[in-house]
Image (cartoon, rainbow, N blue to C red; front, top):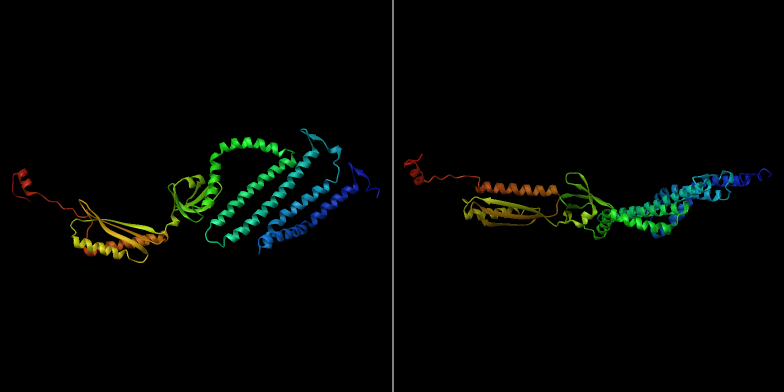
Length: 372
């Protein structure tokens, strides 16, 4: 008992042993305690969202929760001891005690922020699972967007807490100074802020969603991801393009996935040697060809009589099909029209060239009536 009452570096030996025992005890049972606390947190969340996956929640929060508990209880236990004045030297006008206090506060805050980030990941996984039950990918991308957004907010709060509790800065004074600096930064990063605002416009206005085929500023491709700053597009050439969100909002954007029909065209210049009866039968034959399966509506007409050809134009519309199916329909239409032209001996303008020699003119220039 006399030994336990001895004072070493300003503290009794018993106090050292008690602090050491508490830390070792927590070190040994931290996983058990963290699982108990994780179970309590899970019950609270389960009241808000039913049928949650407890195993997934436990795997996410047990590790950061156990680290947080170990650091918290260790800091509380060490606070029972008096820091030895013999060791309280100064380093660049900062005492060793102040450095250790700041380091402990930083580690504790980081562990707490880590726990909050894991909680956000779990909540995001719940919302993502619910979003998978709805048609479309809009809800899924919205979950990813707000998950990243709240993570950034939590990280900023953590940095402010470190400045406040570890270094003793006045947050109000610092925020006032940051507001002035922020205004200057906002001017410098105006485009980035515009892209951030545009990302909110995209999510709430929904001009397109993930998986849509779009065309914007000579870029055609499929939307793969909508981020805070830019939208990622997989082009038809399989390249990966990042387009700033501001341009996606301000530019004229054609959402090709929302087309109700796909349009095909026929532009034919028929030779003037074709009779009106054959021309009419030819137009009727094209109409029959365009009545095939896969084409919903079509119009064919003789639009004009030019100096060198009869102009026959046809427009047809298919249902929303894939690009490969559309090309197959278009190829079949073109081949059927060619077969019809061959069967009716109809030629396109310019495929044959006729030369006419005026006899009188030639005789006047040559002085002879014989033509060869």
